[in-house]
Length: 258
Image (tube, rainbow, N blue to C red; front, top):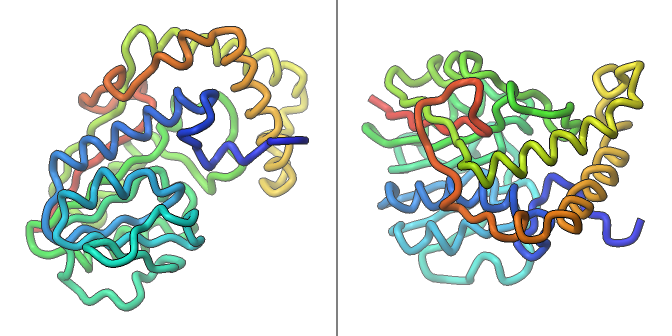
């Protein structure tokens, strides 16, 4: 179908993605308040985090398995891109980074435990990992692009294997965000009611990705058409962090290497 792109790559230029984009943006805005020195980003993605993080770093290394769009990563200066599939973090010595940020990526990596171990390895003593991932308890459908999703306790178990000290925050939304969420939930339920065999949970993920992307994109654009002001008015300030529980949209953990 024309102009249907993967729902996994959030676009800041597509107004129908605004609800998700602004939620993702919050993680980078919080990171920008914290990071300094040598910073590693795992998962360049569309690259919108580069401009937010690079000004606060002496050196900003961003890695991804795919090359970002042209012009996203500036040549020279303090920013470097490396194409890399992880784990391991190839070419990075132990104790070389002050901060590692990893937003909406760990759910895509097969060896999640190995990845967290590698992050712990490359951090300097007292270095910090800032990591986010969707909260499984708030997911409306199975996402076939995710190898897994985590509950709060499951994510604590993963991070706690390699970090003795961490803070478990969640990303929440105000009334405007919750209004959009409820509209979206009702729209998704109108689609999934036809899946009476629960095939979304039984079929192999590769078979679900194309229909998932098509239906997700159609649903977001319908929500935009029917709720234009609500959809486009949501901004990062409509999201906030507090202690994680089952009602948060995303898990946002800050772990410190002792």
